[in-house]
Length: 137
Image (cartoon, rainbow, N blue to C red; front, top):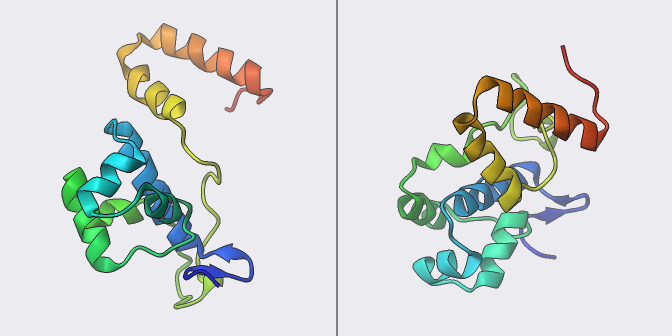
């Protein structure tokens, strides 16, 4: 069994941390090989980290944070833990989203603030129409 993978797949925290590594890597314009070379790892190992299939050791997470010039806590931001429940998979609440970020979604979020308010609303309306999601109130 691969470390970090239980009966139902990777632990939610490992998936979350891996997703944050992936999002930051893409937003900075690095590919998996770039990050792997900086850490002395293969791109395959980076893939496993990003999917949560392999847990990232504390020292390796420290190295990744230094490479990205972020605090180690960055990788845990957005992780919701239910209060009063310790050391249990059940203590990790559902993620706001459970889909991988892509280069496109990251670029959209990076470019959107450069649009006027009217242009942002038009872009949002177009995305909602394409996804079939109704307007939220």
